[in-house]
Amino acid sequence: MRVIAGTFRSRVLSEVSLETTRETKDRVKESIFNSISPYLHGSKVLDLFGGSGSLGIEAISRGSEFCEFVDVNNIACKTMKENIKNLKIEDKTTVIQSNYEDYLKSCTKKFDIILLDPPYQLEVLDDIINLIQSYKLLDDNGIIVCLYGKNYSLKEDINGIIEYKQKNIGITKVSFMKWGI
Image (cartoon, rainbow, N blue to C red; front, side, top):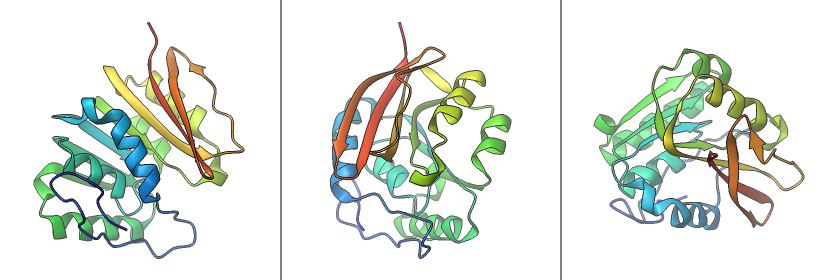
């Protein structure tokens, strides 16, 4: 696995060696970041279900100012920290070991971009977006990027957060969401 573009282009990242963790394929990452590239410069990013940290690291490589990584798994957090240290971006990151629900309920920050890539079998994206909306964690002009299995259906409008774009890439669906007008 590698960083696709930006400052750390072609740098190899360590992967999480767990069966419960699915790494995002390069073509999926490339498609996502090509779609949100105008919003990356100077942005504050949340990478929930961080895994190896590849999505948040890609955001930093392409110009994001800061990324907060969250994962419940200790091995995933260690892998993220290793990748962050190898790229020397500790000053632009925070790694938090927590389950998503506890983290979202205690978070007091607002993010410009929220990356949601939970294990496909969880099917919790609607609940997570409800929590993001309830706790006002998405900036007014922010974007949520949801990755999920092609057999899952995400609501198009969740308490004022609407889907404005969707892509199908192999076994992965990607939804781009923002506050509705």
